[in-house]
Amino acid sequence: MSGPQCCENPPTLDPNSGLGRVEKFGGLDTYITGSPNSNRGILLVSDIFGYQAPNLRKLADKVAAAGFYVVVPDFFYGDPYNGVEDYGPIAVWLKNHGPLKGFEDSKPVIEALKCKGITAIGAAGMCWGAKVVVELDKTELIQAGVFLHPSFVTVDDIKDVKVPLAILGAELDHVSPPALLKQFEEVLASKPEVKSYVKIFPGVSHGWSVRYDTNDPAAVKAAEESHKEMLDWFITYVK
Image 1 (cartoon, rainbow, N blue to C red):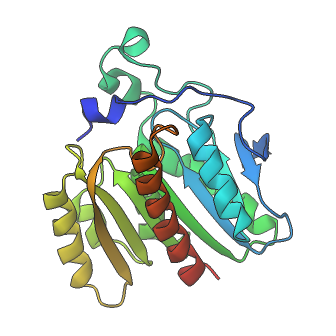
Image 2 (cartoon, rainbow, N blue to C red):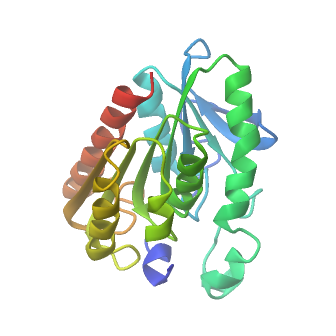
Image 3 (cartoon, rainbow, N blue to C red):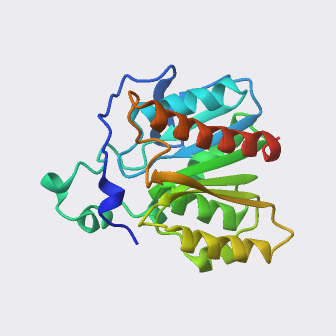
């Protein structure tokens, strides 16, 4: 389900980016931002390029500014995907970095949030991270989830979702094309007990929410629209 489009527009990683700090959290190196006194927590799960991507950290800071305590763990243990030169096809890298392992690693992170007094938790996943989030949705370890340009998520996954879910997709996405997201929408519509929202953003490609060119006003605008949709979802359902 992954493909070349997953690997396009890799960010220039910067371990010092963002307004927050990096420390161990739930056993993982984690970018943390936001008020430690908040009782609402958000877990952001990166795409294959990992937690040092500046645009991702900028998004975490934006969510934190809305009153959430935000954690962005390094689910890749310092080994994000670095391209074909290092790993060959992405399938080779995925053998040691599968999203189901990410899901297992997310459980201590969720527990650490609860130990801090966080009483409501949301999670958003980009690309690879969406598969982690759908597993959290199935087990009700979180109060709400958001996918942004998901990868690896199947119709069967969606059938088992138990908490409010927003899916933000791209019109020009070959990884999770609009036709697949429409199937997700149909399944969710058959589950009225689960609040859901599916939106296809026009004219954008897989990765647009975090792998955009900061010097391209149109790309920035499209990304910021997705950020607002995500944040609105969390404000509504993580409380």
